[in-house]
Image 1 (tube, rainbow, N blue to C red):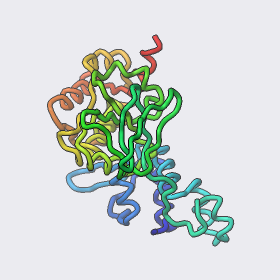
Image 2: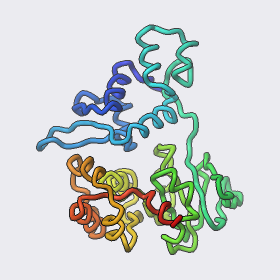
Image 3: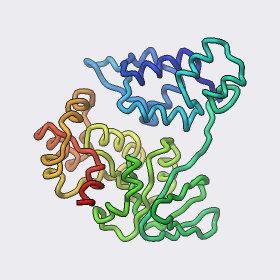
Length: 285
């Protein structure tokens, strides 16, 4: 396992605080992995200059905690600077050697109707009660029926309240999967099967980028971006102008197909984007 050096840790801290750093100054295996996993973002300035920035600081914090065992980046850096003892450093890092560790592998799943799955060649019924989830650790041996559609949910709150959003989908058998804790495990599992994948995320440039870079890139036409029929009305009525202003300048072309292109046109037409949590609020009306 490679540990995070103090130089890399400080650069990640600068990114979390809102600074953009040229990609050429960040080339190492850990940074590259964070970019591949979609935690760090890249924007193109001019024709060729690429810079790295953070769109969602809490995602980076969660990633450091879940994937690298670093609970407090500031304390971790201070301990490295002061030559702290290994016993003291465990406060900031999950092991005394401050190395990259994986506390858990796998991903969370949920469903409304029971799904008869298979784990280690044995029957496994996925049927968590409301308010609970099932955690799939040995995903390499986890299999679901071919007709089951996998719906990936970007935001934790929407994953928690899937019962209130099930009417959005007309498929008989649906396995909901959570993007967090964020890792490559989910896409590795999706690649080993042939189930259709629908990405249910925010209706903004970043949501489309996440779908493109983390799912469509690996699954191709098996993956689709969920767009409700009344999306224009929702954007017009509930869209967020601040979200649009924050994102639209820092993205390259995201046009994946005609449907996504039309969605992006709506962003520009109304100068608004839409967060997926709106469906939870609307279900309570």
